[in-house]
Structures are given as structure tokens and as C-alpha cells.
Length: 204
Image 1: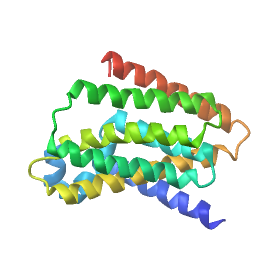
Image 2: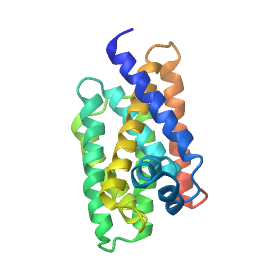
Image 3: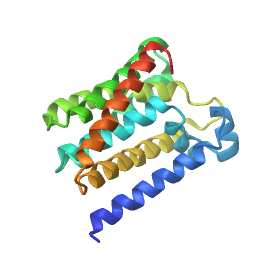
């Protein structure tokens, strides 16, 4: 088994463990009390379905692009999340509705990219990642619990985000190995679009 494949499998299993841990957490404050600031932040990205789907989508799209984009696109998202989180922590007054709408739109846009199954321009994808990464980071920054150590908590949610990206990359890479993999991944993208629309409508 190639080293790259092994690395992706380990990352996917790690991300799966985070999902399992997050299932035990009931609220952000309880996360910190139960896990501490770092683990509370680490599990935070999977507690919101909109966040989780967008981050998995970034990994899948980067896998579809291939080459260096597999790492550069998710890395850029994490960097923009860090910037957005810092600004969100300062709470500069961006409306909650605008932030939630931006996050929902990110799920729709990334889902469409997956469903279309086309090799998009890397620069266009990076531009979208900069935009959407900021919205996700800002939301996380605003939601940092008061009892948490902000820097430690932020480090946790940034690592959690990176691992979820790797889970998405793993999904994308694995579907390339199967004849019907492309059909399956397009169906997943379409499902993400539907869920994103439901977020916009306030159904979810």
C-alpha cells in the first residue's frame, strides 16, 4: 500500500474518531468542561452539520482538482478560518443571519462543484475558499465559549477542520478507485446542495 494511501486512511480514521467524540458533546460550554479547551475546539467543527459538510466538500473538491491542490486548497481554507476566527472573536458586528447565509451558500456552491464533476480552475476554487473560509472562521470565533482558553480552543477547531478536510480528500480519492465512484460522488454533491438549500430556507 502506498504511503500516501496509508496517510489518507489514518487521517480518515482520525476524523471519524472526532465525529464519535463530538456525538457525546451537548453544547459548547459542556464541550470545554468535559474535554478541555483543545479537545472542545477539536470536536466543535462537526457539531454543526453545515460546517461539517462544507469542510468535507473542500476536501472532495481538492481531490477532484488533484496535484498540489489536494493540499493547498484545504490549507488555504484553514488559514482563512484562522483569520475569520480572530475577527469573529473580536465580534466586529457582522450579522448572524449574514454569516449563517454565507455558510449555507458555501455548502450549496461546493456541492454544485462536486455534482458537476468538472475540473474547475484552481484560482476560482481558491477564491471561493478564501470567501467561505472566512465565514466559517468568523462563526467559530464568535462561538468560542467564555470559559475556554481562546487560543487553545482555536487551535483545536483548526486542527479538527484540517482533519475533516483530509476525510473529504480520502472520500474523493477512494471514489476514483471504483467504476461507479464518479456517479456516487456526484450524488453526494447533489445531496449537499439540497441540504444547503434547506439551510437557506431555515428548515434545518
